[in-house]
Length: 448
Image (tube, rainbow, N blue to C red):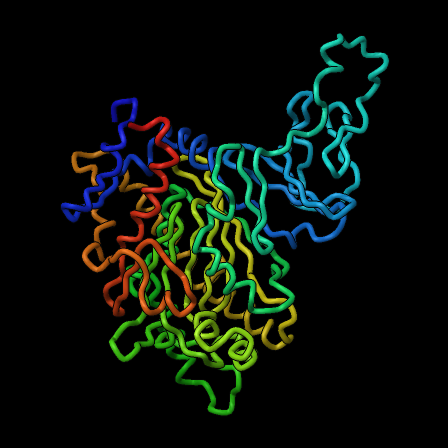
């Protein structure tokens, strides 16, 4: 594609003509990828972690905002802060560990030292250094990120000071985060054991896949067969029963099995009706939640939900609960970090059941994730430049999408920008357009 890029050459968005499609270059072009890192990941809000990952004084964990390494640390007074993980002296990454607890951080190159507030506490041999006057005028502390905020334990940061408030950015999608956090009065936690893996394909393939119902029966038939076999073999006396394939496609009286919702700023939800049953580890709290939150919200807590907070956080709630964090490395290489999410205070039996179902489906060694990542890599091969550059995988469901919400979103007073109600075979793809419209907004500075 001829540079500079033009938005019309990358995203063909013509709702009046019933057209939405994207160009293969979005997935393969290295120059475009560099612009994405600057404007999508380094130019707006991104998810950086959970407050419980740095729960105690002086706890820290590290990560990235786009290409920029960061530290999230709780200081001695319990205040969470977010810094660039680079010594101001020579730019060396200060902390190489994923997480830990430290009152002081010493640069491995020249021993400059910083405390848990990011303040510089020592410059090696400073008095003998013959520094000029300008050096004393510089700020030698770690650089704070431009914006850092928290919503119910979910931490977000931005290198760009000119972003909307975090409350505005999350908008109505906050109510979906509430469904996760409100499973316990003590909040949620990460089950010990982070999984990190890479796949040789573009980050947007993971972005789409989490919201893609259309692939499930095609890509994961072995998982479906095993679920059905377990359901047939389950003893009637078993209190905690394994989830079955039929649990994913429950219908209401109108034939609706679920649908999709799109929110401002690129956030999307793919959801399905699931019964309040012993096939889910949350069942032990079903009656308690109904009394505490009301039946409608309780039922939503049991529904299958795949939530994406654009551009890099995904929370999958179905047989178990997973948090996924997307980190693009190159146009054709993506790192994924995943954790099992769990409500604090659940019983040992529920936790055991949660972990077993998590391992079944979500782990890279499970019965679903390997299927998906192989498909991403095969798709990446098909993204090579060719005479027909436009993909056809973003049009399904266009005529079913309506402005605003529906009876299901009304149950929890949630007001999406658009929504789709569907049967088991509609498998809406129109919600992907919400990702690319948000992508285009962040890229507007360089795309015309």
